[in-house]
Length: 142
Image (cartoon, rainbow, N blue to C red; front, side, top):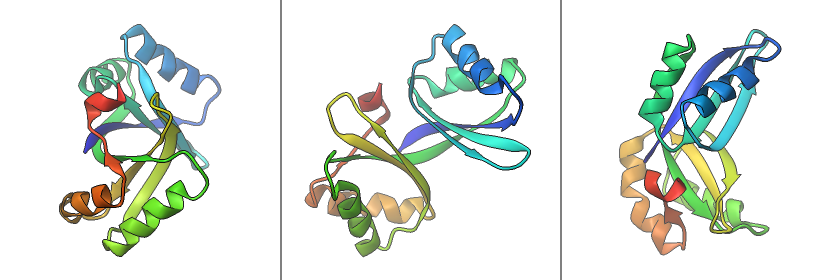
């Protein structure tokens, strides 16, 4: 499992740029950023090199943020790669609350996902690796 930061961000012009500047000024490098919006606010999900430092910088700047454990799974960057991963997770009875993909420096994609039952997901690691997927650690994403 890796650390993901979720930031609750008002839907106002310039807020996302300001959030990114805050992290840049704190020396935080983002590997991934995902945005989901509602009418009044957005949920910005970030994978970065130093989640605790990032959260501290965001808190100091007045943002509301949390750190959540998510799984990061390497996926072959080819047609059907994600479908095969999702089928393997389905076969392992793993329920996904949300997820998003991003590119990785090794040429593969990474699927970051929040699962309903982390204990069940931990027991599925062997099955994922047998199917050819790599469960990644925080250090492998930096």
